[in-house]
Image 1 (tube, rainbow, N blue to C red):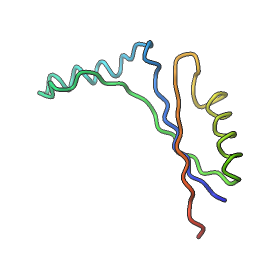
Image 2 (spheres, rainbow, N blue to C red; image 1 turned 45 degrees about the horizontal axis):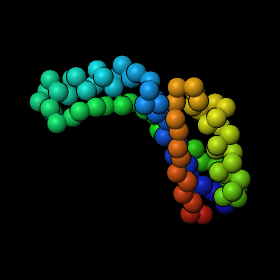
Image 3 (cartoon, rainbow, N blue to C red; image 1 turned 90 degrees about the vertical axis):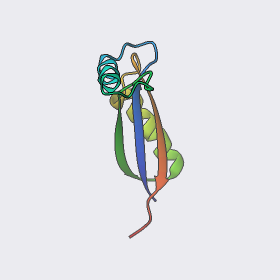
Image 4 (cartoon, helix red, strand yellow; image 1 turned 180 degrees about the vertical axis):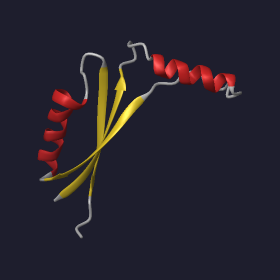
Length: 85
């Protein structure tokens, strides 16, 4: 089975996000004063073949070893089945 996985990587809440702070400041200066906080992250899209349980395990391994820095970043992922073509 083929799956598309979206991995969301964000800085941990305790880690300062200077890029997010800069964007927040700019938004406020442009009149978007309702914005209280901005956190910047990344989205990584992967396409994998395999059984669902194995895909979950492999993506977790990829995140912990390569895609995210567990010291300063959190991650989560969403898996969806890709229709056969």
